[in-house]
Length: 90
Image (tube, rainbow, N blue to C red; front, side, top):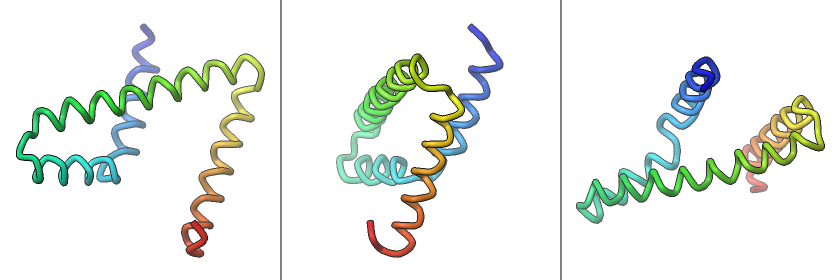
């Protein structure tokens, strides 16, 4: 395992996901149900599935498209969604 890639990914995901909607859902579900461990396990499973799907898609796309273009497309989509949200179109 390439530990440099592991820790770069770990820190990027940790800081990107810090205090986002996913955490707010976890807080709400845990407080409503009173079952924090069940919510924790459900959250981990859901996030693991989403991550697995994104990694598989990224690996598949990289066979046909250069990684730089995938990064540019993702950045462009992120900016466009931000603009749409800013102007209440999304």
